[in-house]
Structures are given as C-alpha cells and as structure tokens.
Amino acid sequence: MQGIFLLFLSVSSLFALHVSVVNDEVGNAKTALVKFAKEEGVVYKEILFEKKKIKIFPNPLHADEYYALIPVSYYERQGKKILKIVYFQKGKKKFQEIILKIKDAKYKKETLHVSASKVNPQLPQVKKRVAKEYKEAMQIYNRVTDKSYIDSKFMLPMQSKITSAFGTARVYNGSLKGYHGGIDFRAKIGTPIVAANDGKVVLVKKRFYSGKTVVIDHGQGIYTCYFHMSKFHVKVNQFVKKGDLLGLSGKSGRVTGPHLHFSVRINGVQVDPLQLITLLNDNLILDKQRK
Image 1 (cartoon, rainbow, N blue to C red):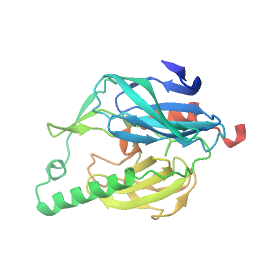
Image 2 (tube, rainbow, N blue to C red):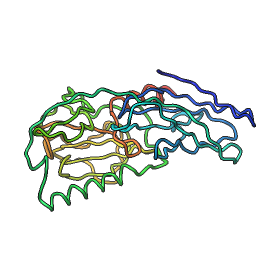
Image 3 (cartoon, helix red, strand yellow):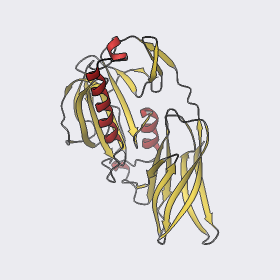
Image 4 (cartoon, one colour):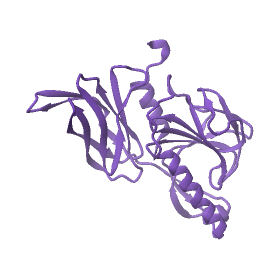
C-alpha cells in the first residue's frame, strides 16, 4: 500500500501530527519511508522500532519536510509492528504510534562453489582477522551523522547486467551460509566503478570476504558499499561526488569470478539497494533542477 496519510489527534491539545507513511507494507530486508510535515512548535526526535532508535531528520532538499528511514532486517518476522514516534510539542515530550506491516519478500536460493578456506576458515589468525574486520565495519555502519551529503538522486555504480539479486539464500559448497546482502553486477576485471551519490569515503581496505572494499557515508545513516575491487582510486576521508571514480572491478575476496558487489546499509541494517534507491529517488530526493 502506498501513500498512507495519517492524522494523529491528541485529545488534550486537539493537535494533529501530520505523518505520511509512503510504504506501510514492506518486505523483510526492505526499507520503509516515513515523512513528516514541518509543524510550528513541534520538534521531531526519533522513531522507536523493535530495539532500535531511528533518528528523524530534516530533508536536506525540502525545507518543509522531515523524514525517517526504517530498515527492516532480513530476519524480521512477518506481521504488524508498532512504531512509536517521539517528538516534542512546545517543549513537552510526546509519543504517537503507527503500524508497519512486515511481509515475506520470498527471496530465492542459489548454490555456489568456492575455495573451502573461504567458506569455513579454520586458521586462528584468519578467524581473528574476520572478526576484527566485521567489528570495524559495524562500528562504521552504526555511526549516524546528522549531516547529509546528498543533493541529487542516486545512480547505480555501473551500467551492467545484474547477475545475482539481493536476498538470495547462499549455499556455499553445500552449506547454507546466509543470504546475498547486495546485488552483483557483471564486470570484467578493470571496469570503472563510480560513487552512487555524494559522500565521504570511510573505508578503503582489502578484507577477507569482500576483498578490496570501499564504503561511502552519505550522511544520516546511509552507507553504500563496493566489494571485490582490483584497484582503488580514493582514500579514507576523501569527499566524492556522484559519478566520481572509486576504483576498478576485480575478483578479490570470496568470489567465483570477477564482478562488482554493491550493497547498502541504513542505520547499520543491510537492505535491498535497488528498493531503497527507488524509494528515495521517487519519494524523498528533490533534484536541484526541479527546485
């Protein structure tokens, strides 16, 4: 269901909180978008969803609008979920609830064959490396900055055929090892990879599973990730514009061949990048040429 517009009335004040839930029914590992109209005397704080606190931000491209992105975990159970909006009206803290329905996205399954050392690494030093890299990455993904670097719509990091969709259950060498956390683009070694939007480069590193990796912080909890590269063209703390060259595709890390793996994190949660980009481009981001 799209474009649900809700008015929440406070009996004591007869105040109407204007909230637009763009997609109040969403699949697991997808993202929901909640928009708020600017209200006199109202300060939006956050949305409480499960055990997470999701900040409500002013839309950097629309002065009269606030928004929050609700990332739904791949493992989230189906059913109706209560989201609690926290806001202040004339200095007084208040709460309102909205409902989000989680449905089964019905992802497919695929079987892959890779080096056994990449499926179940046994060497202590390798296990230690994997754990360290995971912790480092999650510390980055869970960092939510108030600033947004975005000033136009997202683009894909390359124009190529998608060979593996997001969410596909991954069976490595006969053993189920989770799901595909991004989308794979067909790309021979040396194909240019560009930034999906403006942002700050926060990770440039060769990692055990993802190989040569670049991560961009677009601000307000939005991160894009580029895996299995062969060459870097950016450095940590460098600011990039949409379409800037990040590096070249390759086959580093756990792969069956050369390609680009492109993924997205919202508030630390891995979500479907294509669904998120469509959601943002169609409902939130106002391009400069349209202002």
